[in-house]
Length: 504
Image 1: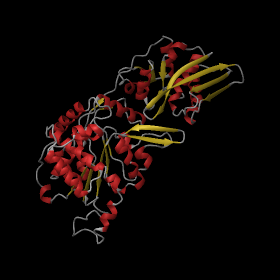
Image 2: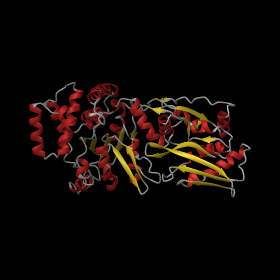
Image 3: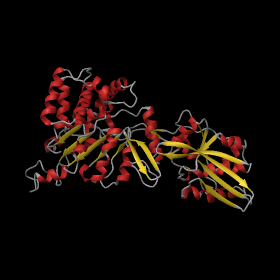
Image 4: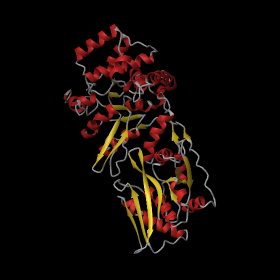
């Protein structure tokens, strides 16, 4: 008899069903695993054998064969321990075969039979719900998986608890969703003295999810401004929270099953490798751009990143997804993020200050900012210069609008965009608009069109730059509550596009 259990193998954020087949037959005693298992999966046989021994279950002196089907799909990770144990227990007729076949399971086994949490419980729960199976997972992973409303999730602390559940001795209770983690950043725009133009750029970027480049001398407040951007963004919607949490689940970043409704804010160091930024490694894990999905990716000291890393950003910034290509698989991750970059104007940082700039000015600035290619710079919707703050401004009390006030306007503008793109899959905000939809929603009035045409001719805007100006103008009009894009909206969008042209 062949007993079957079910689990999943991860390809990006997709969890693909894997059938675990177990056959106990006459022959030379042995325990073999087939079906392209990696080292962690192969070692499962020793963990399973020892865990069963701790429960006083001895394996028969027969040939035990475990097949992971489909056999041509690579199997990676320790989460195959539990389904292998279930298939083996069903083959030994210790637990009912039909109950096991109606379950999708994942979990790592300790040598004493306890179940350890694993990554990927959330996408596994979605896969189980689609297949109309109950998800069985370690107790510590249950709160995470239970966030999928359509899934039936049960969590077990030990393999012995699983056996008692299937034999009817002590049924396991359904898992409950974890806590919603509150946002505790506490950073407010009123902490920033001066920099009103930069604050306005942050508001526009937050409203339409536009990419932002800030150039300024050291200590002018670029990092401080970027750190306050999450406070301007509305909480994740239920759909966005699920998308983001699935990626974080695969990266092992969800603690105790808690779901965070705050938008991600990732700030990798400039020494990060390409695999760390775009994804990759042995298991083609998600990188920083995917971990920032539906949130913000802040790259400080932007020109200090390696050229290969910067150039790899060009395609994900445009398409909203990244494909990690490996010899045996192509893994796709979503990465619809807002890119915020900060840079000094030159290597020493004081190019605009004649009294402090190095003797190599202006060549110093041209060489330094020249590390950012033209095509990549062209993808920034907003470019601003962040001047140094005077000492007198630093002594003034906090002033200006709070993050809550600005966030309310951003939320209103985003609500308009949600309604606008409701019937257009793939578009959520103005930054996503393209083609006929962009023409329909972002055509300025006559005066605005004339201004944009003159600017495009005078400064040689690329087609991409022209369309990005239109998207930004549409967002400014939304913040202004205007259905039509007027000349002032175009003028402000153009000013942000050209204000830092001398640095680029």
